[in-house]
Image (cartoon, rainbow, N blue to C red; front, side, top):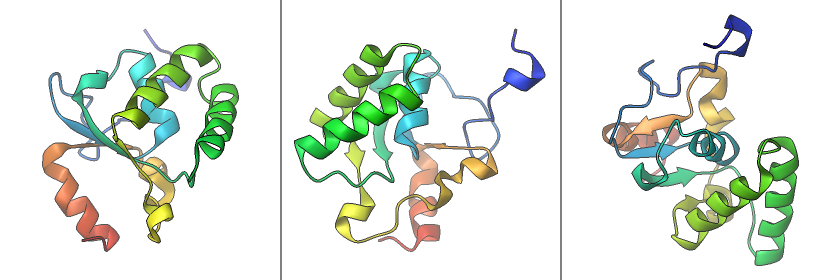
Amino acid sequence: MLKDAEKKPSRFEDGKETPSNAQVVGLSLSFCVRDIMDGEVQEQDVIQIISSTYARSPQEWDEVIARYKQNYWHVDPTKGEEICRRLLVAGKILQPRVEGHEGPLGHQIDQGFYWLSADQVAEWKKQQGWK
């Protein structure tokens, strides 16, 4: 059981925990990969992660991953890297900043969530001003 200080914020905008067998979209590469590592979200349930990263080449991705391994995935950096690279190869990491858009505004983490269920994505993108 987690102590109050160790509790993570609710991962979904509606305040619910990760629904089982639900298709989801993440709003933070670092935190979403960590949730997958922790078994709180199943990798096969991830449709996409909309990231604030700005990596345009394999070398830039290596730098991002090295930084995230140290800062976010330090419990098992190899596992974090493996998950991230699988998502990347599968085309599941969207980088709006590379396409000239803003990334997820503040990741929404300050509002306590960084996962969307599949049915929330269209409305969320509309709120962001994306088409």
